Length: 176
Image (cartoon, rainbow, N blue to C red; front, top):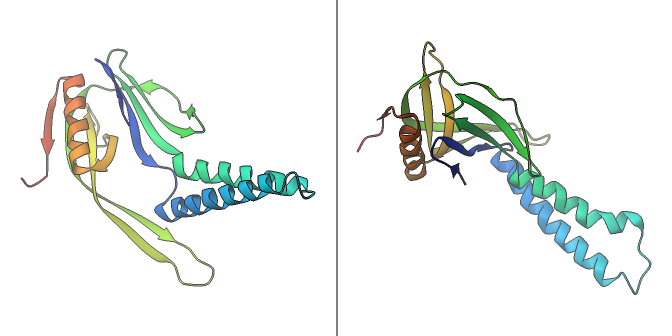
């Protein structure tokens, strides 16, 4: 979800955890819910230990962190600064830095690759296709600022918003 005002943009770039870790997050949330419900149902009848009381909420918390944590970016065209941050439990951790002049906004295909390590099986390389990167090309730099990594339609919409915010051209390598 992106927050947009007349001269600023705030949005998610990518999740902090790999797809495999996010699946583990879903499992932990499910286990946490079951443990919490089991603890609450036996709360009045059986004696429960402190560990049993905390196991459900702890699994829920860890699972929630694995599912919801992401890397984001805030761009402020008016003050000419930006920050990349990590969003964790509602807190944004990141430093504001000077934003060089933005020359153009470009959209291009982007494949994310993850390596899954397992102690039993050999490492497996997983690629996530169908993603597109929105890059801000900045003055006097061969390296741009990645503002969005998303599915095609959403990436194009966010690129158009960034084009309007910075008043620059938008280029795309997508075949239409």
